[in-house]
Image 1 (cartoon, rainbow, N blue to C red):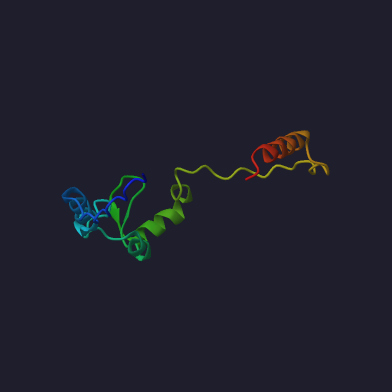
Image 2 (image 1 turned 45 degrees about the horizontal axis):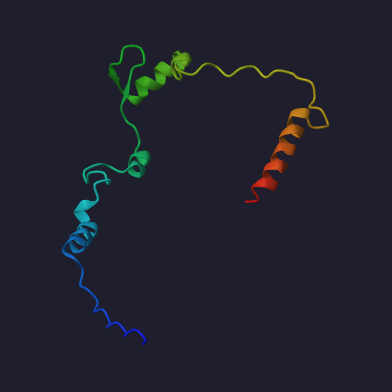
Amino acid sequence: MPPSPRPPVPPSPLSPLALLLLCWAINPESAAGLPPPEDIPEEILRGQIITEARSPIDGQPMTVAEYARLIQTHPELEYPDFPPPPEPEVSSPAPSSPSPTIIDWQSLRDLFRQVFPF
């Protein structure tokens, strides 16, 4: 005797928990990763002209004209945290053939390509 067919299962409505999670996901106030609305975007700050400066000697506020005069008289104060660029060294010309290290890396890369083809 063949088994009797099962009656069709009616579609169930969303459970209360699923409905709550759906409403929480759609809620615009749940976007906690956004900056506060009073925060000025960086794109706007980048376009603004800086009109105030501080003295690199004593930190006192000064006008742009005073700062420019100070930098002209003391150029070492313009970039105090960066050392001067090194003098270029004169070196021998590069060898025409690749170094053995590059060849070793190439053979190792070819081996990985055979094992992992993507």
